[in-house]
Length: 506
Ligand SMILES: Cc1cc2nc3c(=O)[nH]c(=O)nc-3n(C[C@H](O)[C@H](O)[C@H](O)COP(=O)(O)OP(=O)(O)OC[C@H]3O[C@@H](n4cnc5c(N)ncnc54)[C@H](O)[C@@H]3O)c2cc1C
Image (cartoon, rainbow, N blue to C red; front, side, top):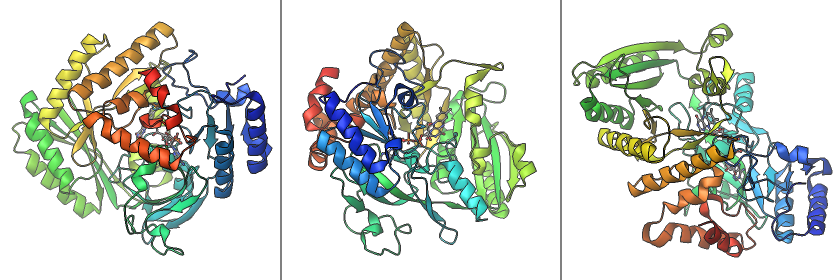
C-alpha cells in the first residue's frame, strides 16, 4: 500500500481521491502499487530504504481548469501536491516528491503546442510537451527553427526550464529563454505574467517583462505555483554549425585560456555552451570544445577571430571536428553521434553514460553541480579543493576534470555520484554528497540545482545573514500557500505548519 499523506486519515484520503476523480476523470487518479512504482525516482539515493520518498497517488489533469480544481481539493484536505511536467528529471529526483505521501500532480496529459511563430521565433507550450514533441511539431510544419536541448530529449521543455536546466547551444539558459507564463496559484487562481497580464495581450511571447516587478523567477525551483503555459524563444535555424577543439599545452596556460573562452562568450562571438577539460595529456593540458552557430561566412570569421585570440598562448592547437550545413538530410542525421547539438532530440546520453564494454553499468547517478566563476584561477582552486574533498570523503578518482560553461560568466563543475542499491554504499555516497555541498559552501560555492532529496541541504548553504533569503522565501510561501499544499520543503522552503520538519531533519 502506498503511504498516506501526513495527517490525513484513510477515509479522508479516499474521499479526496474520489473528488480528484470527479475533476479529472477517475482513470486519471492513479493509486495502486503498480501505478506508484512509475513515480518513484529510478535514480533514488535512498532506493528501497525507509527514507525513500514514495508518493501516495498521482493525479493527471488535462486542462488548466482541472489543475485549478485539483489544487482546491488539495487545499480542502490539506494534501500536498508535487507538480511534474513529464517527471523525467533523472539525476535530480525523477518524478518523486520530497516527502512520502505527497500526490504527484502529473501534467503529462497537457501536451499541446499552443503556438509556434517562425517570424518571431518562439513557441507557447503546455507542461507535458517534450522536446521530441516540439521538435516533431516544428518539423511537420516545416518551420526554420531550432531547439536548444539538454542531452536527453524525452523531458519537457517546461519542467527542464523550471528546474533551470542547461541546453547545448546558444540558448543554453533554458529558463532565461522563456518569455511569459501562466500559473495556477496555490489558491487555485490563474495568473499570467509579463505582457500576458494585459487582457488580449498581443506581445506575451515577445517581451518577458511587462510592467511592474518581474515575478517569473519565483516559479522556477520553487513551490509557489503550478505553471500551466510557458513561452520560449527559439533559435532561427542557422545556416551552419562548426564544432572545434582548442588545446593549450601547459597547466599554467589555464588563466589566459579560460579568459579567452570567457571573452569569446561575453562578446557574443561564441555564445553557445562549451566544455573545458583537463588534463588531456595526449593533446595538451587544457582543451575546450566550442560551437559556432550561424551563417557560414559569419562563423568562419568568428572562428578565425577566436584562433587569433587563442594564439597569444604559445603552443595552442586547433582542431576542426565537424561542419554541418542546414537543413540536414535524414541520411546525414543518421550518422551523427551527438544529435542534440544540432537541435535534434535523442536519448544517446543514456547509452553513453550507463554502458561500459557493452554491458549496463550501475543503477544511475545523481549530480553535484556547484557554480564557480569563469576564471582559470577558480578552476584550479576548484580542482584542488575537490581533489582534497574526494580524499577526505573517500570517493574514487581525483575530482572534476571537466567544467561546463554556464551563463556568461560562470562554470559548472558537474560531479556525478553513482546510485547504489547496497544500503551501506548508498549511505556512504549520500554522506559524501552532503560533504561536497558543505565543503563547496565553505569556499563560497553553491549548487545551481540539486536532487530533490538534497534540496533542503543545498539551501542550507545559501545562509547569508542568518538565512535572510530562505526567510524571504518562506514569508512569500506563507502568504501564497497558507495550507502548505504545494511541494512542502522543495528547495528548502517549508510552509509554516511543517517548518518543524526542517528542524527535525537538521
Ligand atoms: C544521462 C543524463 C543526462 C542529462 N543531461 C542533462 C542536460 O544536458 N541538461 C540538463 O539540464 N539536464 C540534464 N539531465 C537531467 C534531467 O534528466 C533533465 O533536465 C530532464 O529533462 C528534466 O526532466 P523533465 O523535463 O521531465 O522535468 P520535470 O521532472 O517535469 O520537472 C523538473 C522540475 O520542475 C518542477 N516542475 C515541473 N513542471 C512544473 C510545473 N508545471 N509547475 C511547477 N513546477 C514544475 C518539478 O517539480 C521538478 O522539480 C540529464 C540526466 C541524465 C540522466
